[in-house]
Image 1 (cartoon, rainbow, N blue to C red):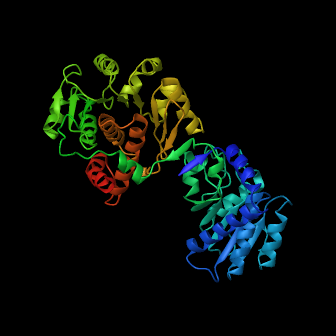
Image 2 (cartoon, rainbow, N blue to C red):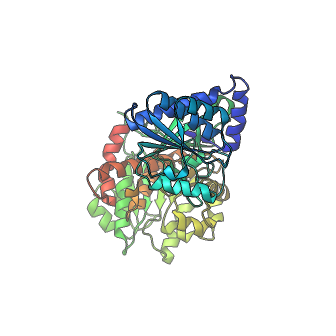
Length: 472
């Protein structure tokens, strides 16, 4: 899935509309909305549908879709919430097909199989006015599922911000292309499943500034050993993690690093005994300088804030290979972002919101913009963790991870992600893609592990080989 800012979409839409018959794009969108409604409900004749209709084109899309549904034998009602304004031709078609206009009090009061949200479109920003907010709250409280047209009302289409009441859709039918706000932040949660309706806009648009990876793209990045490979040609990753207090962080990061496609893992740190006992194939030492040559480093999980931890971090950053910095490594860099910017080899930073704030200032509602700002400032790939993790490159490219899961909100989950991305870096994957692919695989592992019950970080390690087997 690829997404563009609203302003670019509007301009592209105007160019396409100038080349096609008047109203044809709206009819195409209405057909797709009606079809999606029938498929979601599971039947047509006799179903009850309620439209929430605003004053703009989204309201017109909803009315034309409602007319199509009424002609299929559905009972379709519409609440007109445009303050006296409505898409006149859409309303005429709706009434001609047998649709009925009803008062706002009908929302949640009468039986309904589906609610269609056509209140606001991509031009809306900020909190909803009180009358619309009341309708939205009533719709969310109703027992019927909600289908949103283009973007759930109350969600910022560019940032995903929700500033007050907003539709919680089960399905969003998106004419044209995806909007950035459907992929990130609260918008991703409010959108539910997103269905795209091609309208020919992409030919009129520049390359997408925001996109998602998919199974095929990630699978193509994974390395499989060939007949001429040995442990060194496959890549060696170094892991600097854990401490006497947090040996588990080292075990989790190393455990994931072993599974990312490399031929060998070198561990450096105070948890060498714990790592060696758990993973006898890992080469261990107590210091980075004694670890030997690697093609990439992962540093930070469970490292602590002791003076020696900072010294080991400096040795890693002084190396000429890609480095992933996480957790305590990020905390040790607080106030010293220029240290990252001075590196000549690639760096990947993987902060959650609080770690991000220590390095770059608060995360704004525009999570894509926040990550992009941090990447430009640091010269590093920045992976901003969250339900929809955002990965930003210094050159402005952004990927959003579509496999996020609440199951990942468990202790040690980030240590697993760090080791996995470090391993991908060591196999030679581009740092931007390695970070995004690591998040993608991490999410798939969480979904697989959750099938068996509550998820812990070791469960992610158990699930990763199956994920790799599915994609390789």
